[in-house]
Image (cartoon, rainbow, N blue to C red; front, side):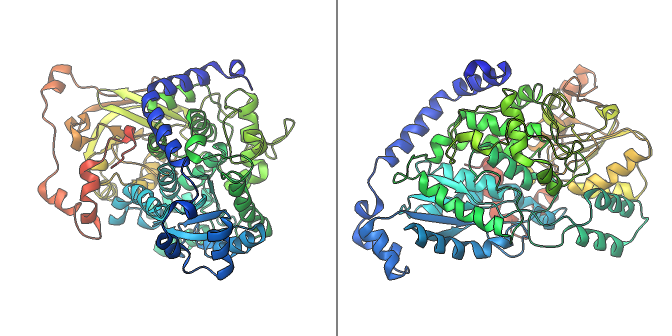
Length: 597
């Protein structure tokens, strides 16, 4: 595809991103080119260094590395057997060692990275470590690769912060070719729609804990990724669009012959893009402005997770590229919504895959001029190799549609601006008549306070629920997913309801309008700290505005509220939170990726 056949907005946004980050990108590329120019590790490192690196290898593999100088590939794995999505990784190293022997290469598990489950920590103190775990994962990836003896890397991770963390860490070793190796989704269990219904019944007091536990256990029931289209599965879609997967690897179930074949192919793929392969493709060169824009478009076209408006800003920054929410917003205005997957519809990712999955989506976007076809890829044939044929049809019109007949002509995310700051909203699942909400504010300092007010029957009229001091510097920007069922109940009663917060919602944000990620956050001087109970707040996703309708002289004279010392103490210690003081102190704003580096 030539530049002239690109959609003009795609072309304009890409050019703006390229110009905005010209100096930082140039410095980044110069740094990785310098590293790439060095000789192979067996020639470059001292004898003792190499001896330590291969000491535990079988004799024939030592010979390959030291004498034959065969490719040596790192495995960086997020395996643990608590996370259902990561449990399948237990058997991948053995599979890859056997394949490496067949291909005349070696692989070594260079390191493991932490992997926490947001599903387990939702509404718990551990959730306050969740966002910052991304940067810990990036650091752990850097430590794994710091031995500097590898020709490439296979990166194994699926879930929310794990993929962005692995990607950020790998980009700090941008001279290395890297391929991501997914593990696949669990089989469909209780439908996401039925699960949500039971959660709302529980919130209304219509069923007890036993019924809720049974529903949750039926939904989350086996190894593999959770099947709703939240952050984890959005990660996989974006990696496909970025050319960092073996094509169509994202949503093939674990424990199947097809999954094993794709895992073996990932090793062959990374070997093909090392310096000793047919076409050297280091990850730092591959992840350029075109690649980042392709990821943004894929996110918008599928109604993906709002978390990526934080994570992919950080990913881009790791490659010397600067993007912001205005870029997402401008793209969203022209990228059609092609997928309806829960929470934007009733289907799950297994239905999405059967209907055509990532290859169908990528083909539609490519043919509409909404992706850079010339972006690099780990796969021979580039982006086109990952696409369905030009004449492919959707296997289910209720799940996937063509770009010329989409579910919506625009993407599922919007930027909101006003006197409360900048925020984002996911509108793809919000009913059209709820895109504008104007109501008095109720101001809270935690989701626990909101839940207590709901249980106490305090919400009897239209309301904008404000939960502030939830940003990165305050308490690590936890997801406020536990608010979804009670707010949905209120909306179901006919009230006009919205959530406004400097915290996050889950990648499974649903049908209640939620202005999230407000920046500057309240603790960093943001205007959210000026709000008081009863202030009229207007959230307008049509106009893209978020304002407190308070007379300007009064608004200007208000002093920002600050959390109490007891509140700060509670969120700064206990259950590991004290170890993350540095992250909270140095975290940037949400629109800057909430990075602590």
